[in-house]
Structures are given as C-alpha cells and as structure tokens.
Image 1 (cartoon, helix red, strand yellow):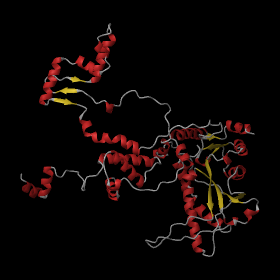
Image 2 (tube, helix red, strand yellow):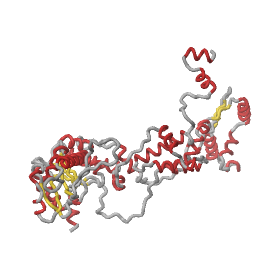
Image 3 (cartoon, helix red, strand yellow):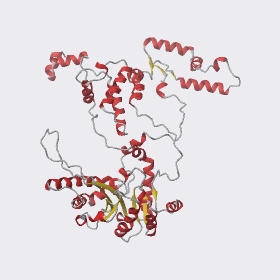
Image 4 (cartoon, helix red, strand yellow):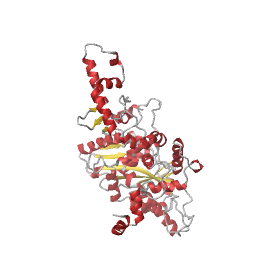
Length: 516
C-alpha cells in the first residue's frame, strides 16, 4: 500500500505516515526539543527530591538549580550563564507535573527525631494492654493539655477586592496571654476549662468578666500565666476528680510536662485509682487527641470570634472585660463531641488502632536512625558481577559460568591428596577457566562467534543502562540526604526521658521520693 492510499484509507496525513516510517517521528515521543539532561536522570533526581521533602529535607527552587548546575558541570554539560535558566525550570515542571512548590509546616528537630516508629509501637502496645486489662470504656479514657491565647489575635480571612496588595485587620493593642487547660474523654465529653491569667494576687482575676466565660470555668493566676506544678495538682483535685465520675479505674493521658508529674498529683491519682500515662516526649503533635483535632479548630474559631467582635464594635478592643465572652464563643463552637472523638480516633487511642498513624509521619525520623550494628558486606554487588554465561546456539549447547567453574575447581583442590600444580595456586578465576574448558568446546565457541550463533547473556542490560550508570554516583552525592553520624555526648542521666511512662506505677512515686 502506498503512502497516499494509506493516508486516504485511514484518514491520516501523508506526512505523518512518512515521518513514522522513516523514523523521524516516534510513537510516544513528546513534542519540543530534547532535554539537556537525559530524562532517566531527571526521573532519578525527582525521586531524590520527593524523598527528601517527605523526610523534612526539602529542596528549594534555588537549591535545585545549583545542584543541577553542579551535576551538569561534572558531566561536561554547559548552560547559559553556567546555571539552568527559567526556561529549563518551566520545562522541568512540565515534564514532571508531580513536582509542586509548597511551604512546609514547622517541625522541630527534636520532634522529628522522637516520632520514631519503634517508640510509638511500643507505646501503643503498652497503652492497649492497660485498656484491655482494666476493661476501660470510652468514657474512662481522658486526655488533658494546655493551650495559650492572646488578646492580640490572627485576623480571620475576609472578603476583599481582587488584586489588592495590603489589607488591614484590626487587633487588640495588648498581647497579654492566657493559658487554657482542657480535658476531654473518648466518648466526646469535656470538663470545665481552667483559665490561668497573669498576676501575683487574686485581684488579677477579679478584673476579668468571669461571668461571661463557659459555665463552671475555673479561674486562677500565675506570675507569667504559665502552667506550674502547684496549678497542676490544684487542677487534678478540684477539676478532674470532681468531674470524672465515680467509675474506677480511669485513664488519664498527658504529655511529659513537669506539672503533670507532681508528687501530690500522683499520690492523689493512686489513692483514687486513676491511671496516668505520659506520652513519649515530643510526640504530642501526632499522639495527643487535643493537639490532633481540637486545638486546631479552637484556634480558628477564636480568630473568627475576635475578628467579628472587632468588626461589630469599632470603639472596643479585646481586653479583660470582653475576652471571656469571646472565649466562650470559640470554646462552644470548636470543643464539640465530633472533634473530640475524631482526635481519639486519629491518634489510635479509641478505637484502639496501632496503624492509626500513617507511615509518612515516621519518615523525618529515618534520617536520624543509626544501625544497631555495622555489618561489613563481603560480597560484591550483583551489578558489578555480570553473568558471563555463554549460550551456544548449536546442536550441542554448552553453558559455562564463572561461578560453576570456580566451584568445580575448589572442590577438586579441596579433596585432592596432593597440593597440586602451581597453576592451582593462582588466585585468578581465569586460571580455572582455562583448565576447565575442553579444546573441542573452544573451537565450537569460535565457530559460533563467527556465524552469530553465540549469545552473551548479562551484557545487553548494561549497554542499555550505561548512560544511567554513569550518573548514579554523582546524583547520590549531590541529591541524597546526608547521613546522621553518632556524636560524642555526655553520659545520659538516669532522669532522662526517652519513652512513655505509667506515672501511677509503683516505680515512679518511689523515684520521686528519693529525689527529696
């Protein structure tokens, strides 16, 4: 069939058919000029970038351009002005649409280290044993934590003209802080909050319009409006024990703040048959229900309530007399049964679920993991030992491998009574290779090599991937995450906290007594 007839029959332009037949155009080939760096190499770079971002070592656009420039220089590829330009960057994003620019969330190095999968799984195991052995119901499992709010808030998003560069949002002049202690259980119930204001005498509380706060709110004070040991014991006795109900035992999950480990608090908990579990340190952002699903909505609701108040009352600002009503509005809108249950479910406490945390939350800690023991690899990687098996496509097929020949040679020398000839002592595989190949087979191999009946297995992949192999070492050196190395630290004291603890066990109070 001619080109013209094929074009009329299949309704395809004649030039398209000619280009595909002659090889000028290929099926699956993308439009545009060929990329400066091979596409296989770009795919490897993208994998390195995405893996680094998931582990908290994200690469910025500027860093990527600098790294690619280094890689190109090592390979003799030149860019205009020595670095890839905006046209390369746009083409790179087009070729790899999975790459986007995002602003990461803040995560301290301590938190990224401590949220380790082994630590978390051990915590879940012990926690679920406690829940099952004590036959705890959802209403018996509590979580308490603190959050802080200021009179000066973050304005909520409002409607504005498109393209406006600056938009004002009125806030309060004062930045006074108030600490709020909340306590909720897995069935969706909540206890009255405790508000800690800044001051040294009870008179500082009298200046607040406490009547406008949520019902039964406990008000107290501290010099810096912080949670302290004395207030922790006060809250447990006057709030928790008064509102947890008569059922025993019950479980209270807390973070590792010092105010939660006061001797008076632990003694009261033991006497009341209240089990207190301390979370692994620096893991509350994923393991604490209040942090996971309650305090986030509360902060948004608080910002909206403050913005609405400032809009509706131009002559007023947020102060001690107006803050309690704003706090009540945000508290009732966010600390709801649905949000509370969602927090316990997302942290795997109730329903009990060891796999509640997705695997990607553990990725930042992998950069700091060190092997338990350093094992020396004595075997050579398979990629550096190509299979030298020769397949003879003739009447009598002969398959020879260097491994088989060496094994035959070793067995013959091992079981022989005599030491053997000097050739047997040569530590070279070629000596055994020459000794094992019969002359007739060598001639057959040479004939097969001449007529094309010989096939060398294990070399075709190397030829196809040679270009990728030439880039691997440089890509790993430039784009891989640096390995964490062990540092010389001072000996860890016996009081260092590295895991979760049952604070009401017999060991903890005894240790506390010994400190005095």
